[in-house]
Length: 162
Image 1 (cartoon, one colour):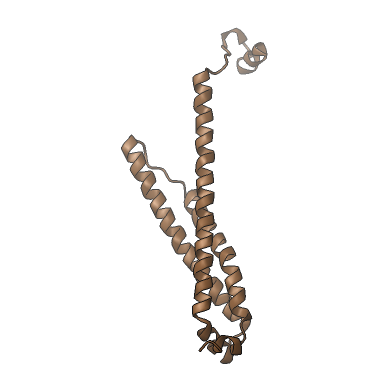
Image 2 (cartoon, rainbow, N blue to C red):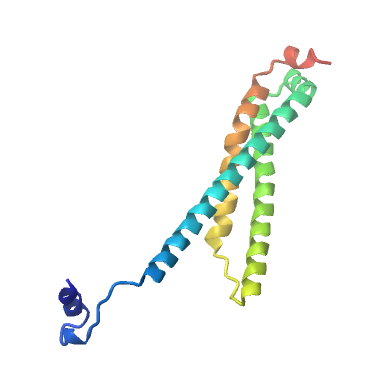
C-alpha cells in the first residue's frame, strides 16, 4: 500500500515519498477535537430545546391572560386566522430576540476567548445566520400550539372570564 501512495504522490520518483502512520498523540488529539465538537453540538441542541420550552410557556400564559382581548377582537370581527397569525408572529419575534441575544453573547464569548489565546477573531456569517434561522424555526414550532388554542376560542368562551 505504501508503494501505491508514493507512486500517486510523485510518479516520477516514488522512492522520495515517505509514508507513515500518524502518531498516537495526533490520533488522540483528533479524537478529542471530534468529542468536543459533538459535546458543543449537544449543548446547542439542549439550549434550543430549553428556548423552545420557554417560548411555548410564555405564549401559553400570554393566551391565558389575554382571553378577554381575544374574545373582544373575535366579537368585533377578527377571524381565527388573524388571531392565530398575531400569536404566531409574537412567538417568532420573541424567539428572534432570544436568538439575536444568543448570537451576540456567543460572538462576545468567542471574541474574548480568541483574544485571550492571541488568535484572530473569525465568526463566519453562516454561524450568525444559523443561529437566527434556528431561533426562527424554534419560535414558529413552539408558538404554533398556543396560537391555534387562541384562535379556537369563541367570543363567548373568551369573554366569559370577565
